[in-house]
Length: 332
Image (cartoon, rainbow, N blue to C red; front, side, top):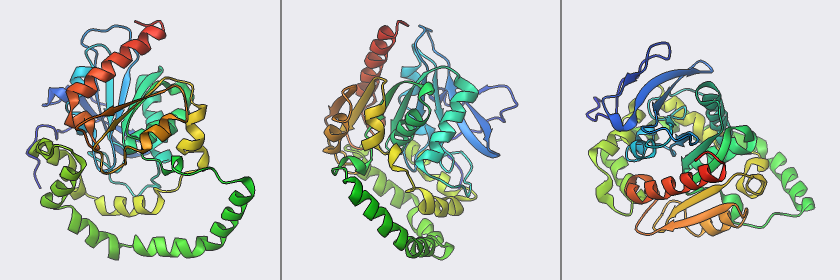
């Protein structure tokens, strides 16, 4: 399949000079080698540098840095903006890797260490939000602030089990683990995953599900569908999907929201579309209740991806919040 959108561009190797993307909204695109795998990222220098902290944008499951098509240019007016394709997504390599949110958090940390090098504001959508939360919990030195555009973490839904119940639960899970592993590997075998990917990646199927993620389905245009619909045809897409279904749920409790959020000490902004049908908005107040530093803003007429659906509103909120953050940190 040939890309028709200008958002899908050829990045240069990391050893070559930066080149302007044919889509200036995304800034400069480039490839970076991480643990031997190819990772795509973009960078846009602040139009009017104001000494504000840099911003790193992290997309959600099945998306790519192109999902920030309506945000990068606006946010880069006063600060440097970076965006990257998580391994397995977008124009990054479709590797058979041990995928999990912690794995992607390590990728985010190493990207920050390689290219940013000073405390940044991490901005994520959906899976990207979880990745940013875990990166900040695991590597607190990288983050000066956090912005989540919804935060899909089921740990906030129920009460924490007593210690004795947790030990009993772990014992039961240990007994079940061999059977669960057998079932998981059976369901993620090529005989299952290959036909599944073949069935779900046609453009009409992806378009149907993309429209479910948006309150206003008219926003789902050809440009967006190139961002979402071309990577599943990349070499290695099947093996990457198999690896994700095997490993992605493996997250230690210490990095789940219920335990991680109360320990974070940076300012946090949580945006949630009131019409989000993928991650229920009722989770938002439960997340916000875990830390008084979290400011929750619910967005009307917005679904799972408000940054793309109502970018003017989201960009305005982010710029206002970033300005307040810089002022409180003495950087404005």
